Image (cartoon, helix red, strand yellow):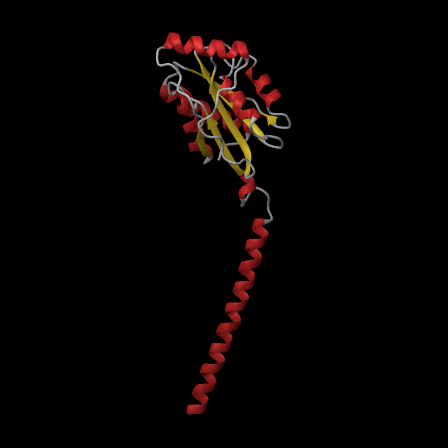
Length: 204
């Protein structure tokens, strides 16, 4: 009887090991198959939101994009602070535009290697992108990336800033952008962002 009991325990243990091996192999193959499907997993599908915001308008749009897409977010900042008074600030912006200045960044953006889609947001200052946006674009390689611009302004819209962005980021595919007025109602921004991303096929 003891020998029969031992034999039964041995058989049950062996069967358990066989089932364990079968499920382990099946799980491994399933994981490999999923990893092989582009966009389902891995770093290749990551997205990044880069934005510059002085008064918070562009930041609000960037935050909504992050909510919808789950993208990483990076706030671009000046190494040297701009004047606090609007008149002095405005004079400096125009002076930088006249000479084509490239203001220094406090910190460069994250390595773009793992990102497929990069959202770039900025306020429109005196009919152009802030000069630090050119600094950032020229200091990094956007070739092969999908670049999605968004901007805020008092009402001017993008003007020709998308063309300038495209020229400063050769090799990138630049999609249609979103403009949000500075005086837009806060509760209107989420819907505008969601509709825009849905139309581009980028909604999470």
